[in-house]
Length: 401
View 1 (cartoon, one colour):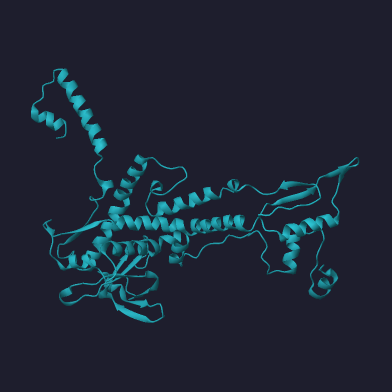
View 2 (spheres, rainbow, N blue to C red):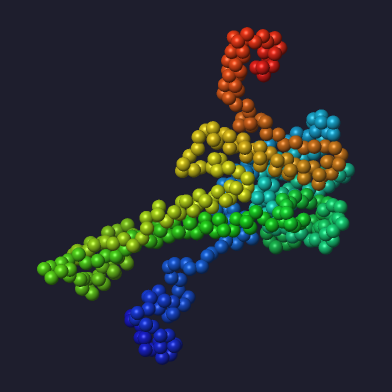
């Protein structure tokens, strides 16, 4: 039905110029209608960190990899003399932190919480003789920190925090005593308590990843070929335009068909595309750049993840070792140190060491060692051929034996 422009102009003050853009005319008449083409940026809500973790595969892949690598550590307890301790209540806690988790699961949960919120809360109530036999990681999004208001001149965390408040899924609240909660925070360099999450720094790349997936989905599901069908008939006088009836027939036929059907018409037409191929939109390049931002902020390496370009075995192996050395080992040890400190065992001289030497990737490279030994043997042989006299002890030292 055609719009009565005089009626719209007389009663609603809407003036429509035939020379104006069609999209602008639609917006004036129907301002709430969403028209194709978003003109303003749309950013994700970084306060919903767990939702982003579930919905964005690139974010989850990075956080999962980091958490899995940290959870692969084996804990060893040592006393102040450096001797391994095999009988202590904290080892019983490590053997079973809570009814549903192993120590690896426990560390994995802590790593995910730290990655999403930079805050980790562990419910670990002290029993008789300050023994702790239960440690449950609590979702940081459901914890409220009640500060004491006294920030300066406090010698420990208890002076900064009065209590914690945990909210259950049904909305009920429970106040938790400071002494029953192990609180671990990854500093942002400013806030002593409740630091800013890393997710806040990923607002733009995470938003672009969602936009990229949305764009690809729209292209696949809703947008067929975009272009112009023009008349291809001609006579001695030149091109013959389509009649209004032919145009309307093709429009209706195009509209009612699904995108995988073809149009059959008696009119001869040309197709002029008006869209870019998907590869020219650089959607995959944008996705890769945004994923790199996530990888960098968590201290990992691109070679640990799948890529169209692929990586050599040696690159992957060296990258994994580098990530363990630069990120995983120090961060995991920091978690262990915080737990021991909050349990009061650091003051007693105990150390909980995170060991990764059992992992195959951390074992010495036998091929490289063999090549080194061969080069040393050849060098020693040349020295002896030149008349350099070496004792058996010097030869063994030269060979690294």
